[in-house]
Amino acid sequence: MFPSLFAKEPKAGKSLLPLLLVAVLVVLPVLAYLAWYLPSVGLIHIHPLLPWLAGLIIGGTVLFFCFGLTLLLLTLVTGKDLLLTDSLRRFIIKYLLPGILGLGQLLRLDPERLQNAFISLNNQLVRAAMKPLAAREVMILLPHCLQRSDCPVKITGNLNQCLRCGRCAIMELIDLARAKGVELAVVTGGTLARKVISQRRPKLIVAVACERDLVSGIRDAWPLPVIALINERPEGPCVNTRVDVAQVARILEEQIATGIP
Ligand code: SF4
Image (tube, rainbow, N blue to C red; front, side, top):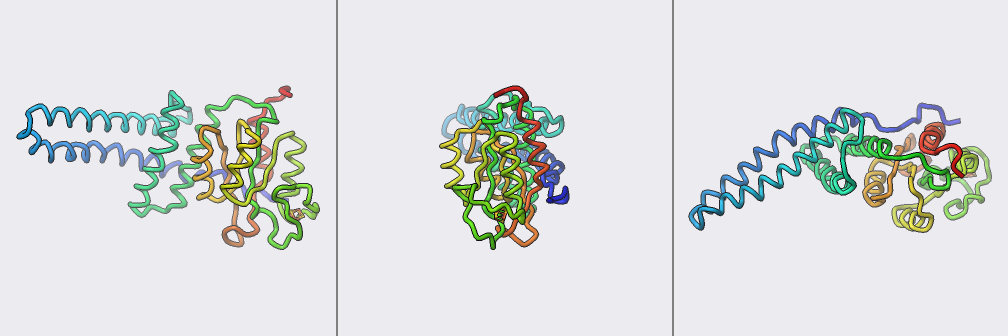
């Protein structure tokens, strides 16, 4: 019913983010040098060792950032998760990447393309790190705007209320979740999403939403992995949105191990 026209695993960011990372890797050491050099002229009059100390602190911080950025760049280019440890992964997803996206906004780059880049990288990292799961450990998380705005029933909280008219993707997604044995939840916003996640405690979330909500959701859900699918909004934001159900099914097939109860 919902053709591949609506497939929206992000791809646009694949070239944008590496370019932004290379730019930061070039500019950051120059800025760090200036940040060290200018005050060091005054610091040397206070104590001859102070410029060295400042150099160590600034240089160490910049090296750490450049190391993280380089790993991120290599991860993007090779498609392999090279982020070594969970704490480095956390630092990059929670802090470094949003910082770079903020920089992109300062440079007046299209925020949607930047968010797309973030989502694309996140999906790549999650896929590279995930081991196959049992179906019951996976949850599909949907926004309520997938439901037709003129639908007479309220399905958030009780999916059985769906009258199965087939006018939106909800019916097919309910069927898919039942067939695969995965959890399914429809939420009205971040607060309800957090509540559902803490109640059901999945090991992987397949989330559908707009770029902005997916970016904040991915960060909020950390360390829980999220594979994110951007919805289509043919009638504008937050109303009668769509998603390619076949794409959701493909993600489930890829992540769920056969034979695990
Ligand atoms: S498929 Fe279900 S949720 Fe969607 S419009 Fe029909 S009754 Fe409402």
